[in-house]
Each structure stands twice: as structure tokens, then as C-alpha cells.
Length: 508
Image 1: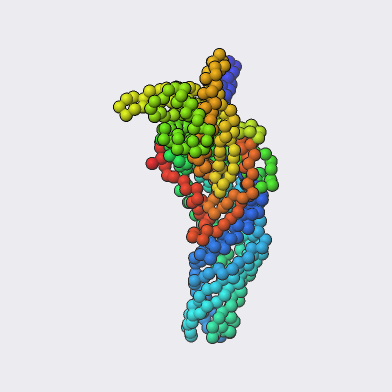
Image 2: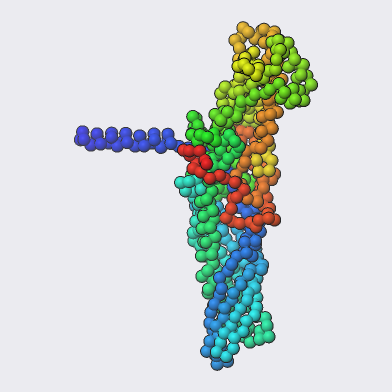
């Protein structure tokens, strides 16, 4: 009895330990991307354009066969259709629907296609070549595209339950002997249908496999600038309901030279149940916190301005700033050129609250002089905190941020804050930040953060909402065929992802 209880206790401890380990290793997404039924419906429209371009380039295998012509006492007629080209097609009844927990079901019914081809005919009595038109009707396809992911964070597609067939075909020969050839077209059409129906599912499956081959070449990291990389890898299988599919992306920044995890963890967030837009993208506070940490670690928040830069750049932005800087010279009796250095002392603090996105920047402000033959001499050094509002916009395929100064205060004892000179200096530094440092920061921020999207797909009718702990981007899609490059099901080339391992060492 004692032994039995001990086993139960040990087994319970084992289960609790596994639950602890499992919870400790949970990774929540920094970015959630949701596609709704509206996106699928638009996908049909855009997909038709893509398919049209693709099938016109598609090499279709030759169709060969043999028929006997008993009424002409001919034992056999061998035929070969080659150079088969699809000139036009219509798929009027096409639908896409989510299959919860599985993938996307595709259904095509009552499709038609017009095909041109060259042909050769050989028999014991004659042989000939020419052209023909093939009209296919009753085109039917159904199948489920299963959505999953692999250990490298790539999407994986698999075609299940494929059923494809063509009900009717009509061959029309052209040439001097077309009346003769059309007389035995009917048995030939049956043979064509038999061979064609065998080929359809393997052809569709090969296209899905080609997609996977391309996905496997995608790397999870994208170089943003000379400071950071952004990890776009999937962290779990897509979540599929009756109304949408959610893709959970890691959405974390790393310093360019050090791909180590952030010292803080991601937290879960839930997208609202909206369906008016095609796509919803949730960007969590963790995404921006990791960006803040990565840029801070890489030294991107350190700015040093020389005398020439100060007077050429800063004074241009504010007529009153020149007198302020002159006042600094008067206060500290500067008899030689000086430099201003602003550096973040900690990673800027990100706060996302409903309708309000702020960034608090703890930093140090140093004015120093340095002659050619001497070391730097600090004139004044003060710590401060600048609180900024973050404005957001979508430009092209990027999320653009810009900063405006909300409040500014020096980190001084309360007893010193009544000092007139300190208050005057606080105002001067606030103006330098407002007219000088923040414009420099905003100029760099104009390159924005790239949003994940396939090639030739633009984001339109976009809206941004700041919610508790995350941004919500609502947007529609617009497909545009590139004139220089034909569309392909195989590419997300616009992501321009770089090579290299996604974690553990810098990308080459």
C-alpha cells in the first residue's frame, strides 16, 4: 500500500514538473496575421489572374493514343497531340472555405477551357500533321490544402482528398482532310479524357510541392538596417476556424551582431472578432520592446553632434534655437568649439494603451569640448527622461513610426528643481531634443518596419488602432501583376529574406 502511494506521489510530481517545463517554454507570437473569408473571396479573383498567367506558360505533356477505323478497314491510327497550349479558360463556380483545424477547401465546378495543339497521325495507309482545337467542359476539382509548419518556421502545404476530372471534350481538326479526321474524333476524345483525368491531380500536387520547395528556401530573418534583424518565423501551426486562419509569427528583433533572446518574455494577446477587412495584423508590445532592446544593445540611440552640425542642422529647424545655444555658451563660458552627445542609458520603455502609444526614453545629455591635442573635457552632464508620443502610418508595405516630444524632465533631486538656471537649462535641452534630435530620429524611422506580405500584393484601405498591449492593423489586399516578372505561386521574393541560421549566431 505504501509503495502504491509512493508511486502515485512520484508520478504526480513528474506530471507537475512537465507542466512547469511546458509553461516555461511557451512562446507567444509578437505578430499575429489573420486572413478572413473576405481574403479568400478576393483570393479567387486574384488567383484567376495568377492561374491565367501560369497555365499559359505551363508545359503540358503530349497526349498519345491509337484507334481503329473499322468502317475504313484500317487496323489502327496512331495519333499524338503535342505543343498543347491553354488559350482561355473559365472557372465560373469557384469557392474557397476554411476547414476548422485542417486547412482550406477549394471547389471548382462547371469549368471550361480552350486548348490548341499540333497533331500527328500515322496509319498503314497514310500519315499527316496539322493543328486542332480542343474544347473541355465540365471541369471539376475539389481538394483540401492542409496548412502546417516545420521546425524552421516555414509554412507547409499538403493537398488532401484531391478529386479532379473533365466531363466532356470536343476535338476539332483543321486541314484538307479534316472531314476524315473528325469522323474518328469521338473515340479519340474518350481516350483524351481518360489520360487527362489521370494527369490532373498529379499536376496540381506538383504545384503544391513546388510551393513547399520555395517555402523551404525562405529564411526566418530579415535585415532591417545596420543595427537589427527581424525574425518572421512561424512559431506554431496555423490556427483555423470556420471564419479565419491565424498565423503566429515570432515577431522579435535581434541586434545584428548578437542573436540572443531578449531578457523579457512575450505575452499572449487576442485579436478581436472582426471580419470587415481581408487581413488583420496584430503587432504586440513585445515586438516594439524587442526592437527597443535590440537598437539599444546595438548602440543605435547614441547621437553626437559637432558644433558645425549643431549650427547647420539644428538652427535651420528653429530660429530661436540659435539664441538658446548661444545662451549655453554664455552660461558655461565656452571659448572653443563644443559637442553635444545624447545617449540612451536604458532601452526606451514602450507603452501601448487604448488610443495611446508612448515611448519613454531614459538618456544622458553631455556637452563637452575637445581640442586637437587634448582629451575630452565635460562641461555639463545630466540625465533626463523624454516621453514621446508615437504616430503611426502605413506607407507601401511598411509600418512607419514618428516621434513627437510629449514631456521632458531632468533627473534631479526635488530640491534642485527650483533653481532658475536648472529650469532654464531644462527648457534649452527640451528644445534641442524637439528641434534637433527627434527630427534626426524620425528621418531614420521613415524607412519603417516591413510588414509580411506576398509578392505583388499591396495593402489598401488600411487602418491602425492602438489597443491594450498591441496594435491592430486592418487592411484589404490588392493584387498587381508585375510587368517585369510573371506572377508565380512559388515566390514571396518581396520579403527579401537573408540567409543564415535564425538563432544562435549572426547571419553572414
